[in-house]
Length: 379
Ligand code: GN1
Ligand code: MG
Image 1: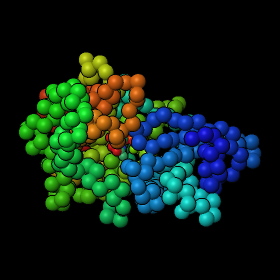
Image 2: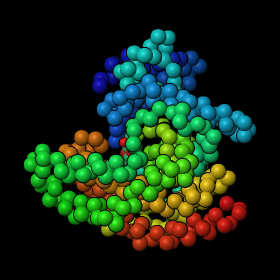
Image 3: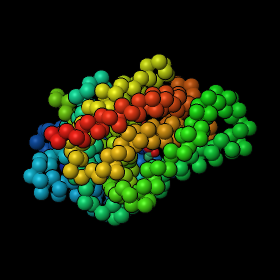
Image 4: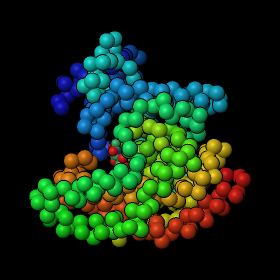
């Protein structure tokens, strides 16, 4: 979209000042994101995030925005009650000018505050930052403990229903059109398909969702997309600030949020690393993140949830693996792909297979770490 049209959209939001710059920002696989800079009356510059939300993935932006408002307002209320600073505690939604809301949301545009002096990372070498990542995810859970999750709109039904994701993969595998026109993709993905559809893995996919459905673990407000790049860090201190990308905030399990953060945090490899020899998990990274997470959630987490944390990491990794694979077989219709990277979605799936193999080998280590941390009362 050209700058003039973007400016017209941005003007529909109630922000004082003149627009001085608009840049596209390349992160995220789903939405289009722009950073808009304004010059305010007192000659200061302030940035905001303007997003065009993907209508195929998020067809009901008005309801999604209601979720975002409810959740962010609750976080601020909770922080105030705890006498914690509210300034950078969450991203805030920017309202529209009078009468523009229906029009603008129905066209799938929205604006959010840009939190100054912060940045995101696809990966990090630093164990301290992993502690901080776990802390940010745990904090989100801590603030939202007590929020009636049923009051949220289910933006994407069955988002982390892993057996349903398996069903979608099977549909992609059996789809006649896929089989006929993408023979080469099926060939290239042969080993990946085989690994991910082995019974020993399929049989694990219903464990968390079953416990949730039977109320063995509580239904909570979950972010559902807590990958490392959705965590803001302060540019100077490298301390975590808050979670961003609240599109998928929905009822779910704390175990998902814990696991999704470690899917990307347990290795220094990028999600689409082409050199699989670089895809190595490091149990120290698991430990640091877990310490950060439990430092915030130790008073709210149930024993059942605690026991499920290692499986949560596996589950989120498995789920992303089968989603990337299904999308590859369907011809890249969901996740954004870089046209310069051949078989991008297959590369992503293969990275996740590599992670899963190592997670399966080191499961006992993860369980021991959780036991040790939770026995230590000073977390
Ligand atoms: C998508 O939009 P983004 O990049 O934050 C996806 C997540 C996946 C992730 C994989 C709505 O997140 O579920 O885990 O890609 N979001 C949606 O990187 O499907
Ligand atoms: Mg997202």
